Amino acid sequence: MRELRDRKGALLLILAIAALVGCEGNPSGSAPRPPPELPPVVLDTPENAARSALTGLQAELRAVANNDPQAAQEALEQLRALVAVKAVEKTLNRMPQFKTLFGDDLIEGYIKNWGATIAYYAEGFDFDRMRRGFVAASKVAVLVPATGREDAALIQVTCLRQEDGTWRVSRIEFVTLGTTSAPRPATQPASEP
Image (cartoon, rainbow, N blue to C red; front, side):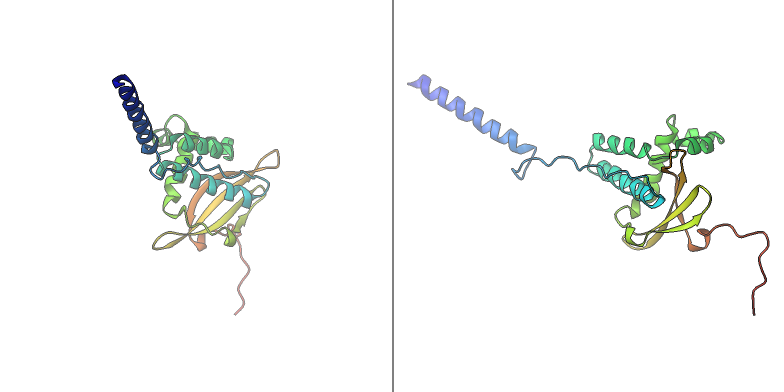
């Protein structure tokens, strides 16, 4: 009889420990949520490439904020797929200080720099007001208004047309309205009074 009571007590103790351990990682008691899916990458237009880059950066920043290194790395890999790698590497390799700044993997360092640049505004992109800035032969600037907690900014995403017809991102930076237009011709017509 005592043996049965000891077994019952041991079983109850095991069940209590299992219940406590099971609830410890999930205080609400509901099923754990899967990590958020990465946003789609669409590279058929400069606007879609810009949106893909900025939503990818949002995903990477959210993963870092949630202390989810696996999701952050997946977002970085996805972002790498939309970078105009040849153009970016050509620019970065011209100046040795970028190796110091971005590390051995220049592209990943460059992408992380984009994230650091836009982090304050990352949850405030206004894609409905996105528009083209300057347009050159195979280079288009996409302007995306964004808001932070206390101010607003204009983010320019420079996209380059690739040989396969897709658009890839070469730069993400802040701009003011005066710096977003195409360069002026060397000679301009006289203005009318």
